[in-house]
Image: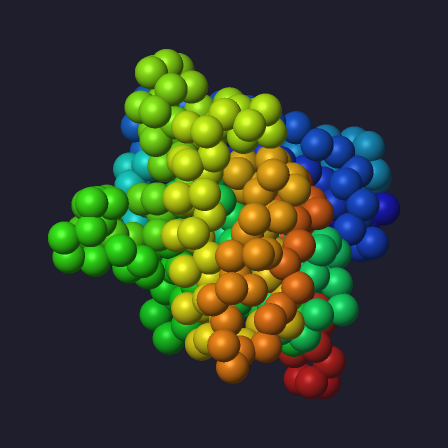
Length: 319
């Protein structure tokens, strides 16, 4: 059976799969990223896992993978196949595509940005199926975005498109205009990410171990402190989303990540807050992501299949 290798590299774990042409996950596994051992150890782990997947595919399906796709965090140059920078993994200017291809005996490899790759999967096989324009926003440790246009993800002129988490939603003397890791101040992710909600709820509740999931649970039970923290985050998120939809005019807003696991505890007030803020803009549908933590692997698989399709098309054109 023809298949591809898919790798989704995160700060904690590397999720991996073998994926069929119909996007079925034939085999799934994961291993620790082991970033504490340093950037070369992370790369060695990626290469070893990919080689194991190739061998598993050869034994199980009678042939090695036809291609591989890999999604990584940070700044990515997809044209050159370079992982330019990833703060949490410690690498700079890493020629990951070529190193992985060489390790796999010349297997063609596609490299993608983790959020854009997850957005590709949500757009084609997840919540965005049939939508010609969408914005995928995962709410996790930080906040990022993937701009979907006619079945592809817009990377921008320099690969930075979709960074909605760094829209400044609070400014100047605002009490919640916090410093952001990007060097800015008042960025959306300092208020509305899952980690930001966790910090705010830990402070408000007096429990240093409390997190965003605990806050959501307290919201459902009517805790006024939790309601205040939650609405504060929802209002900031709505501000950022309205800025994005004013610029992009998406038909669909797909919200994913850890905070979206709260379900209607998040979506009911968020839809209301966005609706309150729009004026002339067309209000898009706001829906939860459908693929969960498989989005990255599925997207990496799509990158691999797209690479094969493009290669086949070039060969036909050259004949």
